[in-house]
Image (cartoon, rainbow, N blue to C red; front, side, top):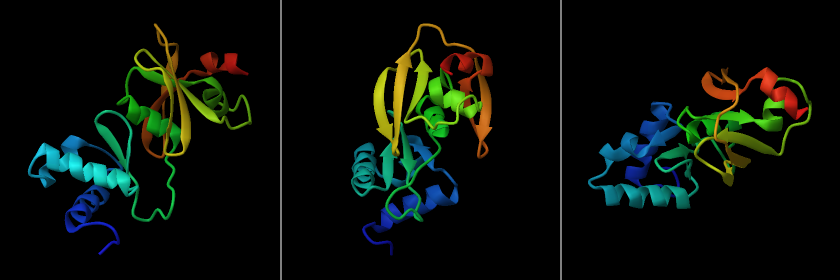
Length: 160
């Protein structure tokens, strides 16, 4: 038995890890619980124990079993999950670094969207969300087999 987890929690974590679902929604785990309130109680327990991190209103990140104290996911993948893969793009110095226009790693990942603004730290990465009326020019790229949207090379040049 994994220390600090109940049998039901172990079943949920095992299912998610076997299915390789690091990012999961409430819908993915609903079948393990008798009611919504039961599910929310367990998700709250997971968060308290540091096993789950909330990504957006309906999505969570499962910290893998092999993680000792901290776990980091690539910030571009986290940004894609926050916005469910649409209506956003990674810009600013993070995009300039991605396209090798600058060598310095940015402290903050700027994400442009039409819906969200403000700042938030998720999985150890600081995100700054900037709301824009119209999204700039962006392209789809992949890291570690996962897609994300990033400012185009031409759009990123203005950050150098």
